[in-house]
Length: 359
Picture 1 (cartoon, helix red, strand yellow):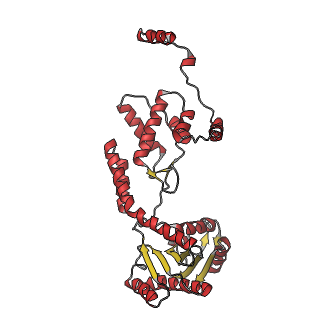
Picture 2 (cartoon, rainbow, N blue to C red):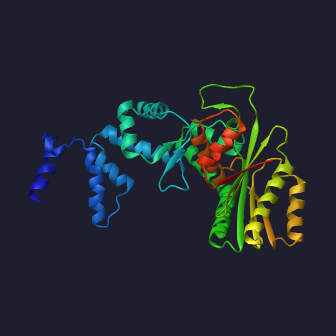
Picture 3 (cartoon, one colour):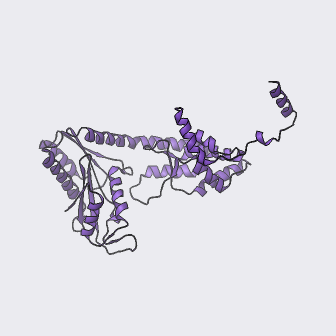
């Protein structure tokens, strides 16, 4: 204790100790970080993201300041991914834009800012859970989400960003309730097949369905348009109905494919489950009055006791059937298809669980 008192007295008197051992500026070898996880795990300790960052960051004031700013910035403008633990998604941007914002704030505060390379290293080492979303030029985006995202990027004050983040969380609660209910209905169909059936229908992106398809090597403006309408029947398989330009993509096609799917279930199992769930998006082919009359007719004819037709909020209709289309397109894209039969063989080969039916 006497030694500590002497050090305090010297510091108050203006003296300093230049011993390098008391001023750690060393860098941690990133190769030992996985070993830290294993050692902690052997003692039953789970290292948090912040604890791992503490092991990776050099003991520099500017680096630590940048880390603190980044942690606060990502929490304010990012969205917590609902299906990934601790993962934060940022709106499409470039890392240079985020660094420029840090540089501006540090300059206004009269503080030194880390370089772009150091900033990128901090991000890759300590914020691997922060992902920049890929820009997707698709129609049907939620206008409310788009406005909130623009405000969150344009607002600079912390209070404004916190307010917009709160508004986004409130908006998110309005559509996540239906998505949660859809997941529950899907689980019922998987776990209790004899009592429940859950289906969802959607169409594959039109730009992915043009023939001939030259594996992205050439473009063909005067191609043969076709439409792939998919119905995913959870735990029972997926069916793709293919139509060409001679058949309009309307309510008639949507209802026919739904009835055909029901007939196939009856043929395989003898009857429909008591409760049938069907998920649709906001397309005009799904919201026609004839759809509701068809649902009433199915129940009136005692094919099932209850049929629940649900619709996801506009701009938030991306669901598990889209992921199936994404898998198909990812495998199909490098292939060459010059006519309908070649695409039919390719689709059936790529996805054995899919049944292709041409209307």
